[in-house]
Image (tube, rainbow, N blue to C red):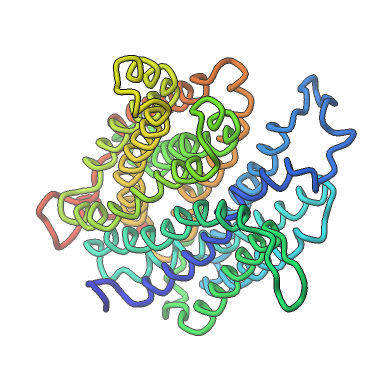
Length: 448
């Protein structure tokens, strides 16, 4: 144990950190790569599909979203399959191998269609990796009162990779080309190499240090069905389904930002590095707060933190859309030395607040769903939330790419509306599984 956390959870967290570092590199690098002229877009930009004009921002959003769509739609099947087999490790390793091989292919393609294909393969790889990894974290918890802390620690490491990756990615691309013994290496190819390295490190950690937990074959639950309505009848909707919907909405608010890179830089008068810092701010705040929030939810309950998170998420997302107007008002009465710096600073502040909100929601939601998972059903139950998160990450870029045509504030107003709807759903449909101060267990444990 380290800091009260199972060393296997720490290993999985480190593996996901390396993997997430590589993936977050691509979130920043792929839009730049597509817009750099190295990818052929002739005959695509300006055409229309089903009446929708294909613009460069839309094509960028499609690449970013495709990963999330295939990742999300694949997770329920891989999660359930891993429950049936009682094997997690082989799913994780296969997914990491597929992601790494696909990352290595980017430097060799120059057509947009092939970039889409590679990103699709990476999405399938993530569909194998994510639900199996989350199921392992859940199953490594010795008791319910460790689950929130375990998810907090795991998410912290994962988010370190995801949060700092965009910052490093911007620097790696800008500092290129690089001179190597094998010839010149462009900034883009260096970034793709980092993505491959992340997958290799993750594969090595899991293959050497992780084994599937011992499990009686009878533990694999027979009831792996997906529920929308509450089985007990005390609420209208099943709590895991509600948490999945709310996770979907939360993930959309996070992913709105990525497609708007050029628009935000223009509106705020900032450079690429500042945008990368703002993009990462949500994740950095998560890194700082995930562990204490996860452990506090083990003692004081899950629901209060989830509700508080959505209460904060609504204004933090909404205000991002009005940063240019707020900054103009502030700069009008501020000292000249602050001119030009207010808008980027405000965006960074609101992104940090959004990150705190996400931290309040994420680990407690996973822990609550884990509390409700029957024996041998971790993959199926938790894949509802991981699927929803991946789907939100896929929808967000497409939504913002479309909505921004109605004004800079439109995508953020949309996201805030979703966050408010999530608040209403959690408040009305989700009950706690932990009684505050009752460390030995949960109030509503279910093994069926």
